[in-house]
Length: 200
Image (cartoon, rainbow, N blue to C red; front, side):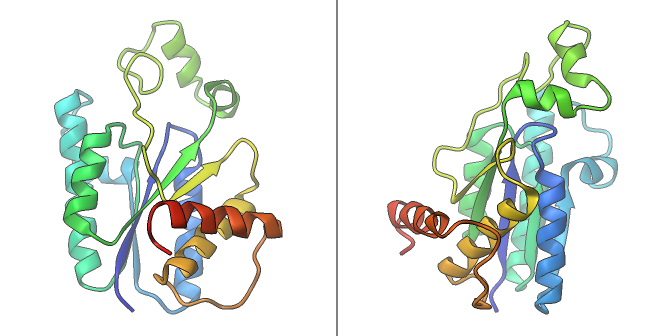
């Protein structure tokens, strides 16, 4: 099986890491080689010393993209889970990697504030934290993601089922024939999106 990159983008708290880890479990169960590059983990290792300026954020995402590129070309499923706020850098990674599936984890700020155990959104909204993505630093939503997760409306199981079924329909992973945890109407929505993007 050829490698590919599954790239999760979205604001802090939108569910990227949770979904990435669940997808990793499924891929491992299916006998695939897989690596997860989580934005927070990468910052303590590969990108140690980088700050949160636009230049440093871009460098961090380019580094994750490069590792995903190497893994993908060696037939590993690379899972990137990072806020990756800027469209241009995500597009750079897409072009470099080729087999790139973007998952946009969409969630309103009001919901993210309630989920935030450290109160970072509240502090950012009060001006106590500067340069917080989605508050006073921009987040550019993907223009044409392969998958859109509504993490305020879907359960984790429903979101994972949508991701797995999309990858099956794209031919990136073998189909098991299981329906998944979503309504039959969701299948047509997935196919419609993939048709619009030219995959099927």
